[in-house]
Image (cartoon, rainbow, N blue to C red):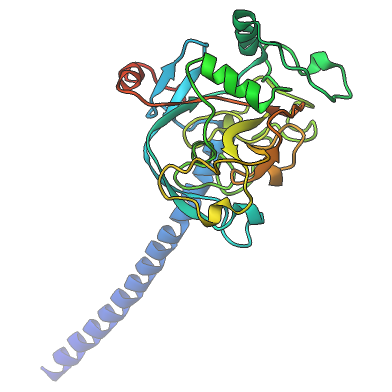
Length: 311
């Protein structure tokens, strides 16, 4: 009887020991799998950006009379500017901003579109003041219009039944409600935008829409690089210190206007979403173009229900 008790007791001890070892092995395996999931997701997201496989079909779009496709940006808050020690002084402090829904051009306005405006209104075509190469390299019909002043950009948008985006609208459209550092995310991706040099395939301007991996969270093209873009606001280096939470429109007056996004002649640092540039509103340049925005109306909402951005 004692031998049986000893035998069964020993068996139970060994069984418990092996069960305990098995539990530790399973727990280690489970922990390892959980730890690997974020990295796997991050890799998948990076691959999506690099191959351009992100799906933007959930965002409504509107076709407008000037031949542009506009993306409807939903209402809501986002963080505007850069965190401390992560940007320029005029990008600070990073602050919360709420915007109602609005629409913005999917792509930059092209030479061909501006030419139609010029013919219809007898408005003079832009003249690029300084460009050391042959001008035809940056004035082809399919390229973004450059050499356009702030006033000319404003006039085109009004003719098309639109307006220039505010600085806050432009930044939300470029960085999304997650306030990405670049339109595609917080890590710079080579060849995701048309920036300085020829490694991205273009020495100067590229036709809008060629950089699929560089699309913004709402699907917009070329919010970094290609042509920099005028926005509606006057420039004030200290405006963010006292900017309103709801629908900021910039200072009432100023000496310079803001333009955003960097250009084909800029580095990755200058192509950050939060980066701010300034120029006189009559100034023209081989690197500055624009896109238009528009308030969302009930009629726009009906139009957008039948048209979606393509992945």
